Length: 274
Image (cartoon, rainbow, N blue to C red):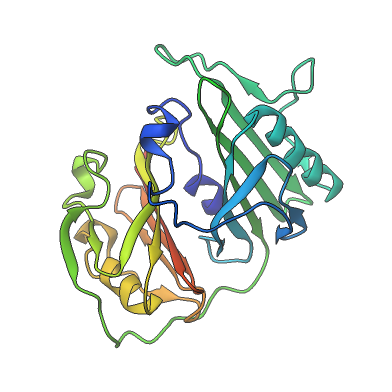
């Protein structure tokens, strides 16, 4: 379930205001109603940040980041109910009050850990994970993984956007995956970097807004990948490019894009905890 791993975030990697807030310029697009994808609708109390991304894996499905200004636990329960109405069954029972958020057992964690993973006929999966502030606000990350054909390779030749000197996720790149990625010209961070859960193994997730053509920016990130990720290629199409790099010994670097005005890229580095 690669797509589910991409958004398996730690809920206690720093405050939401520090690590996960949209760009202070306030220019990132947010939508508070309507369809997300795969039968899901934006739940009251939440807003879709940026675009809806293609699934990170090789089938079909989508990734979405939702900003919650109110009670994250309550809004998460709403998405769980939507999933159940779409015939997903969940592998973990809710608490006595129906809640799916619990205080983690790991020493030093004080904020709730909110996770719900569901399956439908063992062929479709949904993952919901929340990053929660002490006041109850935060982010919800929705990931669906559905059966479908693998995306076709994109042409290898084409314009490549230049790279800046700015590190994409300062201090969050594990030693075995260095050198760290740098921000590509034409892209700017609007969410994150958010530290990955140590239960996953470490790493980060970042959403970037792209001005101009999407593919040159994606190629700019592709050409920076450290040798540990082998020689991955871009797949999909010009509107929804995908990149998955599998590291020797475990771990992944994943980038998915969605074209629009503006376009967006979601990048995740997942360190193996094996």
